[in-house]
Image 1 (cartoon, rainbow, N blue to C red):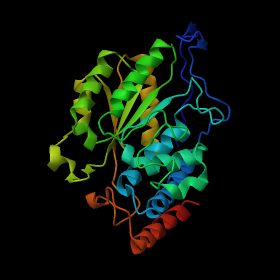
Image 2 (image 1 turned 60 degrees about the horizontal axis):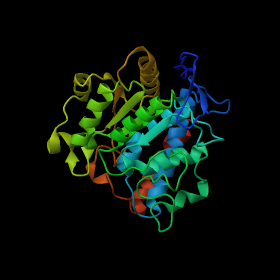
Image 3 (image 1 turned 135 degrees about the vertical axis):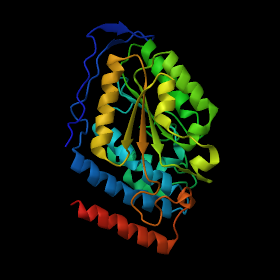
Image 4 (image 1 turned 180 degrees about the vertical axis):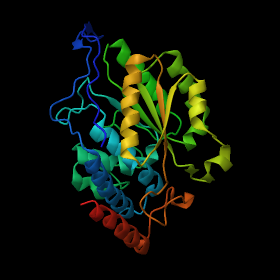
Amino acid sequence: MIATPESIAIPNLEKTNSMSQTLPVSRHQPLNLPRLSVPELKKLAAKLRIDILDMIYEPQSGHPGSSLSCIDLLVALWFSHLVWDPANPDWVLRDRFVMSKGHGAPAYYATLMHAGFIPWEEKNTLRKINSKLQGHPASKYIQGCDISTGSLGQGLSCGVGMALGLRLDYIPSRVVVLMGDGECQEGNVWEAVLSAAHHKTSRVTAIVDRNRLQIDGDTEKIKSLGEMSPKFAAFNWNTIEVDGHDFEQILAALQQADRWAEETNRPTAIIANTTKGKGVSFMENQAGWHGKAPNKEQYEAARAELVAAYDALQ
């Protein structure tokens, strides 16, 4: 079992930000911050997969394939890596997170529910009129969401901007952006990649959910992305490639990104190879489940699989 990330030591100086607040340049971790072991992360991810399915079935709307492919990444981030204060969602020294692949909102919402940012009673309101759980995350309505997302290809630009703003205020927080591989076909992404390297935003980590499928099919047939690590490396990024469903590999990569944040002046890209629809046999590697809710028969079959997987971990 891999050790969970420790606080990163940063020069013990004090600076004054633009709002005249005195902020220590050090990365603190609140005492009540959840930090789960690998077995606990596996159990939580298995449980949240059930919640994702329930959430999408209720309104008959949502993106199961994309949500199931990224839930392990979200669980690892929020419960063993990101620094945040459960008692203070707007804590200025928290890490920032951008859910660039906003259509994976059910996975994000399930994660935030477990973190205590969203009440569990809102679980069955996804995409309904007047619900706070919109089809794509809206920061106006939910805590734990630093920025609204959904227009694909823009999340990394937002993350780079956040990092530059934090630098101006002498705040040593990390910025993590979770991206889909399909959105990496857009030019805006590579402008952001270039800007991040140029401005030496070493505290930016981009995680690409590389499930190789998008709404219209195979990414390589629609607009080939090829090997993504060399592409980021060519733009002067640190790169790591992992199995996006292996918690040991995910946590090791996040720890390495933290080390590089202080040892280099380059941002880090983690290419996470995942399976679209992970956990439901008939959804796995099927582009048709990108944005389609299951009918009653499919829902019951899928839920039985996910419950069996969860029970096997108890």
